[in-house]
Image 1 (cartoon, rainbow, N blue to C red):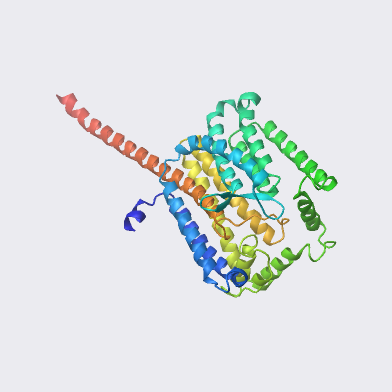
Image 2 (spheres, rainbow, N blue to C red; image 1 turned 45 degrees about the vertical axis):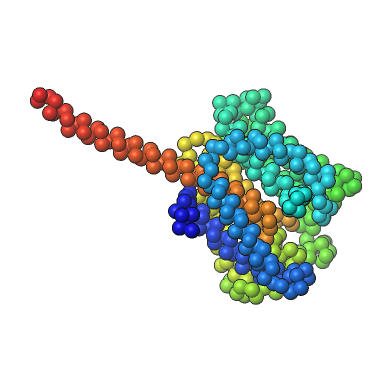
Length: 406
């Protein structure tokens, strides 16, 4: 154990943030799965706690192993990963496990493990985009050589994710736009892409209204937006989730009901995933909710600092892309819980109950820590070179008078 702790490198603040979020996750998941335990595990409330603890533990193992890998290797890994991701997304779309009228899950045959291929696609696409942007800095103004090689994989991945998971595709698309902006892609290309995306979304919603059978999830998207815009006209069933979340948040007050005392966990659908932030506010109050939000902001601030210290473009773009994606998803989840956004189904990274989603998030944070670790090594080596150079200069200055006398 001491040897493992000795080998833990990278940004210490990020490690602390991850540990605190994991503690919140264990407490919130244990509290919010009580009803689920009575329905599916004969009242064994410790079942989901232990399961989640094992998932988090394995996630920490993945994070630790990933942070030991030199981050430049992920440039080549991204190419292989993207090649594997596209057929997996297509396979998910065609024959994936159906949940809520959407094929989002793939099942690994031997171990019977299910995972969302979109989680893997997000990570590999951001890695690949950071690679391409870092290599084409001199061609960012060129449409054919600079912009098209960047945008083709973005369009391909988001199109394959969109039919089953609109919110994930939208978050990934926005993340890629932000990464392209940081990567100095011409603004005229970025604005053209934004316009194309807006037109595409409008067309999809129109098609979903006119031909609902073409998009099984299209009707759900339209209803969620309509109910969010016209809250007064929406039925009680349509706003049930949001109403229960509001009750949870309102009853939490400033200091909360204390851990494990939530009552809305018995009424909220998926209180352990989509609406776990509402449970956190109910039990820990406005102070607890603000603290969780602050943790994600601290995470992003540290990512920006890491990017600023990177000596190469790839590391800076990779850390910013991954960091923005995680924090943006967290903000979307929290905005839905307080009814600032329509219901999306996005989980709260590292806090919501999950399996492979937590593992891919752990790998993503491990990559950020790897960049931080290598940046620290580069900085230390640079400092040593500067000290060595100053030492030699002082020695030479001391020797000059002796040489002149001789």
